[in-house]
Length: 360
Length: 71
Image (cartoon, rainbow over all chains, first blue to last red; front, side, top):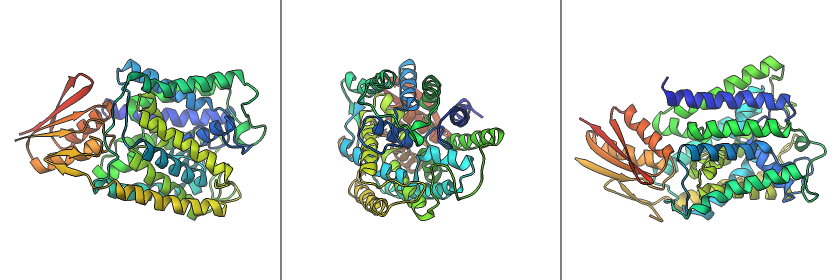
């Protein structure tokens, strides 16, 4: 194995291990690490949605961004860039989140759920792969959101600055911040443990470019399994960890923070996978890119948080009792919207090997 | 034959896709790929190396020039 391969396996393995540790120390079951769930909790913690069980300022997200920021600075890879169809990215982030909250988790949590024996996540991952496969066809036929261009340096620091602000809010606990008293939002590892885990994962994810959607995409497009090694490492380490601590329980019914409606598990993550492949990466990768100074990715995260707010304010999100009709309609409309976005951004003239993308 | 690919500011997989098109079209020779992120540098390098092209990495200010050659 070359050093890059070792790095991506180390990143995935560490994430899998820390996820098991975080659950053992207080996080909800099979939710040691979940970018979608944690961004939803932060959205609720800020009071932007009022679903009382899922409100908390998750230090795992703050740590991840700070870790990736420090790592990007140290490696001189920080670039303040943006302007690649920014609002379209916001909308795609929004749509991906609708799908992820119907499924109840991002691609990272899907793998962690499977490693906990939750077979519904297997159905979701099939949907994710299907969504990515469809998105790949759009990429192959020339889909592009155009080029990002260098921006004034301060722009790239804003997102990490926002995370510092969240950390202050978490520690100061002013009265206008919401923290769940019961439900998943009330279950969390100690702040410093979660923050530290986030920092470590942030550094490793930045160095290795770990991306769940990218792994499936590169395998389909180029038969390149590099990023899939990270994906598999998360699964294997979390599986062994769950078996070791007795947190492994195989089956479809009664899984923690999950429902067993296969169709909507499949379609929810299919929507997320399709949107994410058009965005160039899963929510984890978007967070890392935002920390590296990509303001388009920062706006994508804002779209994801907007999706969390809409999902919970309008009762679209799945829950252990199933997926509400509104959520089912939203997923179908979301798939149509992603299709339209994919279709209209397709024609890019490719001349003599030079792509003349929109915005170039 | 020298072919140039300008993949600056594009998120993956677009730089890889454009490079692949150039490599496939050329078969052998030199392809110069200009990218602006470390992730793109690694992904393009991996594609080229997997296909038997030699990769030379040159820093160009904020951008990175990858010179891919195959005899």
